[in-house]
Length: 114
Image (tube, rainbow, N blue to C red; front, side, top):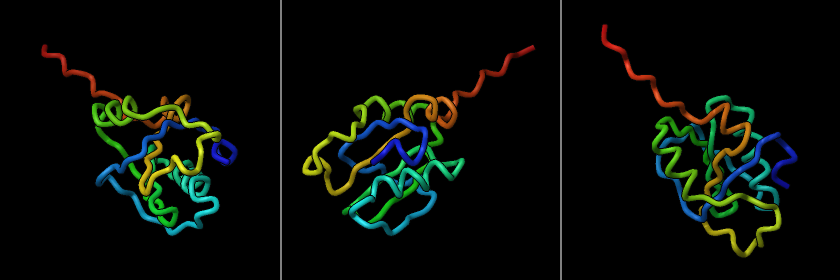
């Protein structure tokens, strides 16, 4: 179950994130989300992933603070009680909680003029 292979909490939405790929992995449909979570947490650049067709995992790096905020705000808190039938053909998971604080892109400070 998610949350047992990393200290992260996640938000989830039943759609894809286009582009921003780090790499794609083939996974077993029985534990697809957990494998993706484990690989995402192990990769310091990863802050989101997409599971599609219960066979593939795309590790993502969302680099834009605005893009991250949009994806984050569109998603709902993931719970392991979500019915398997609710999972779509392509679902994204984005870091929440302490992992979000560590890996979400930060806005760049405005340059001060002297």
